Length: 198
Image 1 (cartoon, rainbow, N blue to C red):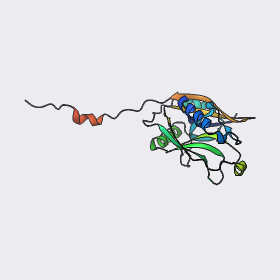
Image 2 (tube, rainbow, N blue to C red):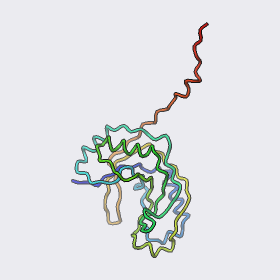
Image 3 (tube, rainbow, N blue to C red):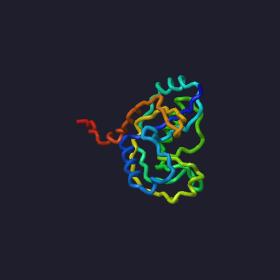
Image 4 (cartoon, helix red, strand yellow):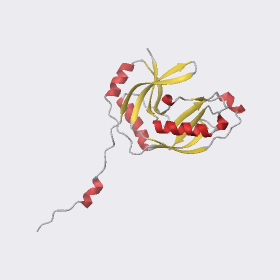
C-alpha cells in the first residue's frame, strides 16, 4: 500500500507552549477561518512528502541511520502568512535556514537512498492553514509578529500523512534521537604544557 511519507523534526513541548501563548495573545485571529494544527502534528519538515510503497524497507534503513544532532538550535523569529505573499494559505513561523540543517537533510536523503529534492530548504513551522480564496475577506491582512522560539535539533521522525474529515493529520511511524555532536578540542593543543629538555 502506498503511503504519503515525509521526515521532520518533532516540535518540543516548550515550543508548543509558546505557540499556545502566542495564539492566546492574538484575539483578532480567533474569528478567522483557520485550521490550527494540533500539538501532535507540529513539526519542522526536513524532507518533503513523497509517495512510498516500500515502507518497511524505508523504516529498516531509517533504523540503521545514525545522524548527528546540530550544535545550534533552530530559532524561529517571525510569524507571517505564507508561503506566497500574493496567495497565502498558511500561518507559519519562519527561521534562518542554517547550513547544518541543510547538511542534515542531505545526510538523511543519502542514508535512506532518496532522490535529493532540488528545492531549497526553508526552515518553517506551519501553525494553521486556510483556503486561499478566503484570504481576501480576512480583516487581518498583515501578519508580522516577532517571536523567539528555540527548537533543538536532537530528534528526527518518519511521518505519515493521514487525510481525515477535519483535515490532514500526521502519524509518527518511527523516531530516533540524534547523536550528540562531537566536540572540537583542537584549540586546547596550544594550552597543553610542552615537554622540555633539561
